[in-house]
Image (cartoon, rainbow, N blue to C red; front, side):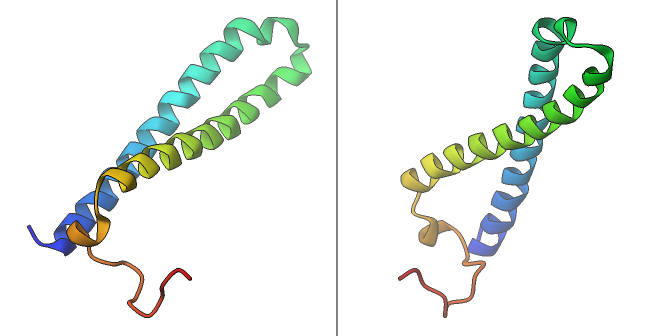
Length: 93
């Protein structure tokens, strides 16, 4: 496979990984919230816990995604296997 196909597969796989981590963290946080927190809250506040759980799941998936990609970037030479998405004129200073 060439670099462009590797890049496309990497982006598709990373997106799928991020979606799976978000869904799993949402369900884990929702179950934990239901089991440990919801029984102590009044009825009016319980509706907000769903939204807060969703936002926490997104934040948690972002952290996990960044950690996994950081580990992957350290182990793999990205320039060797993947095509540059950003144009060649841009370089970190």
